[in-house]
Amino acid sequence: MADNIYQLAGKVNVPAEKKDEMNTYVLEIMDKCGIRKTEKMTVAGTEVIVVSPVQPNADGIVMFDYSIFEKKKREICTYDLNTCELYAEDSGYCEFGVVMNMIMVLQEVYTNGGCYFIEYGKLCTAKPYLHLLQGVLGKRITLPGRIRMWDTYLFFRNSKEYSNITFDELRDDYSVSYGELDVDQLIAVFEVENQKLSFSDNETISCREEIDSASLSGRTEYAYRIFCSMNEDKKITMKSFLAELLNLNFSERKELLAHQDEKGIIAELSLYLLPAYLILAYAKAVGKDFWEIWDSFGSKGYSDIIQEDYPGDTDLDFRKIPFYKVVRRKNEDEFLEFWDGRNLILSQDMKECIQRWKEQFSDISVPSDMLTEYFLAKNITRLNDIYFRYVDKSFVTEFIEHGNDLNHKKALILLERLLDKGQEYFPELTGKQADEWIIQGKRSKFDCVAISALLSLLTNNRQRNKIFGF
Image 1 (cartoon, helix red, strand yellow):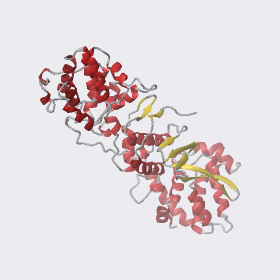
Image 2 (cartoon, rainbow, N blue to C red):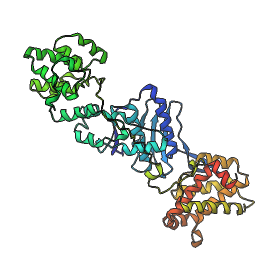
Image 3 (tube, rainbow, N blue to C red):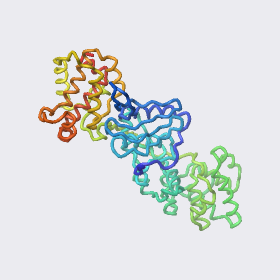
């Protein structure tokens, strides 16, 4: 069944010049957040499941179905490098789903309007995901589409599924994390939703020459007075002119300033006022509903205007939330494969555990008849059977290639000792029976983490060499 709590409304449409950048970020997110692709391998005649970091195929399609932190295999999901589209019906709402949501928010970021991250059919606050993206990527990520609230409001109103969005929802969703707010668009949503115009007696314009220095309220009120002063024939002509004006860019509208009549005045006002203000002023002047006039034009309207300066937010919200906190971990004990020498947030238990492994490793005696590949297959099968994380393919291939190396054999014995913990209490059972019937349900939470952590460490050649010497 398809998950439908978190979705994208609209269509992903990343500009061509931004696709490479976004694709690089998506692949980095998947790698650092543990998204992998499963595949089957034959080891010592046994078929096992392993995972690999995601890579695009020859057609630019990235396929994946597993999170090493959720430890659950899912249906095949895809990401298309050509279109930047994500297909993940089986994302769920745990570790895997968090990463899919991050990618959907990034799709909204790069589409920059016309594509929105929603939850239960409503606009979903993206602030926590921006902080998470910043934590993973280490870069400032803004959401420019949401600072333009009129564009967002219009998008949802014109959609069949999400047409009931309100001014209050847009206002409450806004965060400085998104970027500096477009105040003109915010006010436009408020006034259109309330079908009103806010005028101030001391902000009126007496002549066309004052437009440049006037306020938003003064310009809107001036447009309203111009429309009210027209007779019926001129109002009809003006409606046609407005329909034309909405589809012109800034320079084209500026050319119309040569008109010395009402059209020239409205054209000049259009350099400062968003279409919503002009149409609202016109609708009030002719006594009609705003949306009746707006919809009759069938246009989104221009957005390139000279904006009034408002006090900006100088304190940019560059908060970084690390991934381990979002996926309900208290530390980075399970993240040892990403240990690049910086200080990971490890628990005291894990620090002591790593020291014990180091000491135990040096004392391990390897049986002369140990068959590395058979030993490897047996332990991978046990991990799969008791629902621990699938091992990395590179880990498997390396240990097969170094099957005669003493240190690689010792590492496998160390792993088996962790898996065997507690089996000495059930001599009447086979190892598999003890695992499945008793030990799996009785392991302490940290014992489970330690097994995943050792697998994680053995995959990290650099840190493995520092600790175990190979």
